[in-house]
Every structure is written in C-alpha cells, then in structure tokens.
Length: 64
Image (tube, rainbow, N blue to C red; front, top):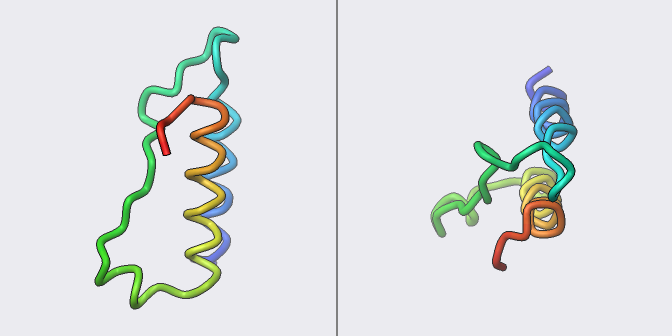
C-alpha cells in the first residue's frame, strides 16, 4: 500500500504542475536526498525520485 501511495501522490502533484499554462509549480520542489539516504534507498525509490526531479526540471524549469 505504501509503495502505491508515493506514485499516486506524485501523479497528483504532476497533474497540477505546468509551465505557463495558468497553474504554478509552487509547492513542487526537487527531492534532494542526503548521501546516507541514497546509500540505503531501494532502486525503485531512486527511480521514483529521478522521475520526479526530471519532470520538475522539464515542467517547472528547475536547474539540474
């Protein structure tokens, strides 16, 4: 159930985030885990964080 909650939450956030189409990216920030967290995280979580950050860079023009 927990593994399903993160992707669903990300979809809700992504649905509200566009460039200049009237919806802002306020509240949608990059995820920057600490090195200790990176060492302990699963491959699935790492892929979800990467997808989140790549989407934010594309839609919200974050700097990479």
